[in-house]
Image 1: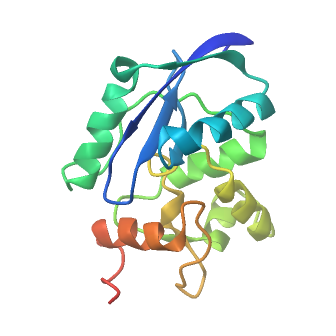
Image 2: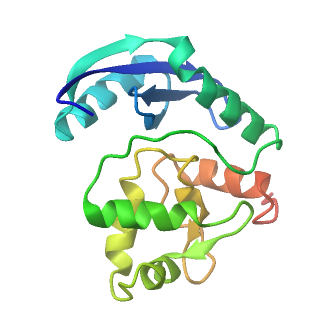
Length: 176
């Protein structure tokens, strides 16, 4: 994306709460857990950190393909997203996020397995850090990464949301 651009946003209700979804003309660039009221200041800070200058524009039409596919996902009708993405992060982060995209629906991997998959077997903590900075959760399925002992560990949206997503995908048993 150029230094000056428009970033479009809209929100949707989901089984894990309201999501604010943002996109450039190149694709989805950010998803935040929460309504626009709370998410826009966080989005503005994220854009500044990424060096992205531009206008924020509420635009349902630009975000509707993502909302449609996320709705299908939450209804159990979609297990793979076919959306353009506009990904911002370090080279290492992007490598981790690409590995996350290779985790199939209903599957999980440990941080150690992701580290091994990207050829950095000792980078387990760094994998956790990259996972935590994933700007497009759900679409880039960081919720599918668990501890090597099978424990639910770390999720930017909260462990409750991670459990719901994994239960919905059939990756874990329903926890009562």
